[in-house]
Image (tube, rainbow, N blue to C red; front, side, top):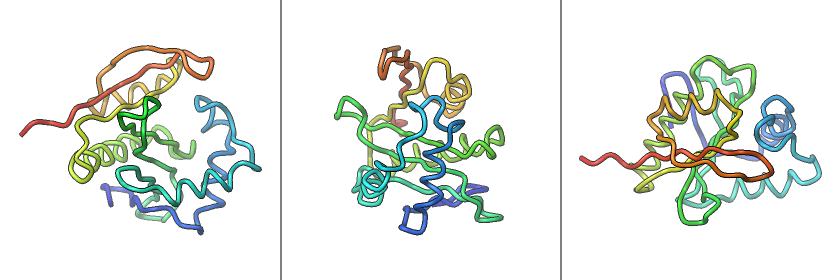
Length: 162
């Protein structure tokens, strides 16, 4: 799958070190519960590799340089009923529009390929950049909850009717 500036592809074992680096990065994990423990990562990475539709993970790379930008997924939401788009990008690429470009593409994929009726996203209330991204791609505020000891905001988007 591609956007104007990125390639999104299913993760492989060769992505292990870059995904681990992203998940251990304090800045990228600031609103995601902090860096994950290196010891627990092999199991998490195996789950990423073995995701089955309608759940999917994609490694995001810059078309021009093949640089690793981040990881994005469609996976079961916390309620185990709905699906959510989730993303984590290397801070070196923040503020350049890659997030918007990629999340739009993944939402479109969720609607057209997985035939999802709606997609959720959840972020910390303090994560203003992520909130702006969600609103920019057309998601609407649904509610506010407390999870993981933090105030979270939940956004949704429904499949467009034709």
